[in-house]
Amino acid sequence: MAGTNSSEIRIAGVGRLYVAKADTPVPTAFTADSALDWTGWTDLGFTSGDGVTFSKKDKLEPVDVWQAVSPVHFVYSDRDLTLKFSLMQFNEDTLPLFMGGGSVSAVSGSSGVYQYDVADRPYADVRALGLEFTDKASDGSAVTYRFGVPRGQVTAADDIKLARKAPAQLGITFTAMANADGSALASFVMKDGSYAASAA
Image (cartoon, rainbow, N blue to C red; front, side, top):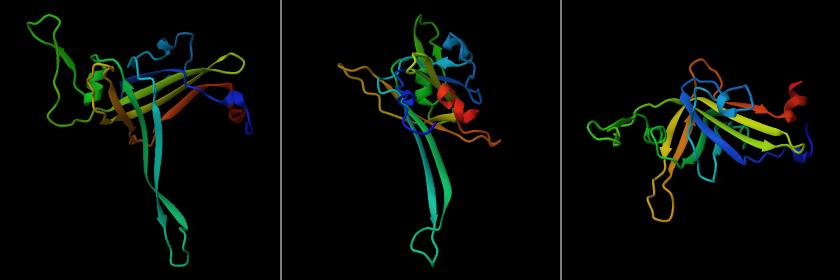
């Protein structure tokens, strides 16, 4: 409902990131155990305290005419939807995601030794990305938001800084990709009573 309402302010105090095979839908069931709702997805573990930066940028091209000094129309030429975050854990799921695909394998004849090979050129590594965060409403009830990108891939990777006084991080920019069938680029799924009036 329009107007000032402090109960509709959302703070993403605690959240999680997940990846899955491309075209995996974001779960719409909200049970007592959130991890079970995300069955089939891989939890990416700890992320930095900066959380996730969500960015939607639309590029519009102005249509100019002789008869006016201002544009009379705009044409949408581009939509860029990205999520930027830094993973804190290094493992068989996070390192290949950061590096652009592939897998970690055990080194033959060496117990407890593993290898990840960086490809000589980039390859498509299309995946689904999911995000969830929980907040508390003014009445004390839990409010949960989920955001899912059915198709996308890592389009930028930050430098990895190895230092004595700070943990190494895997900084990632994940960009949503359009599907050929014209389905949604991404979806929000909310367990939040604030939307009840508009959805009625």
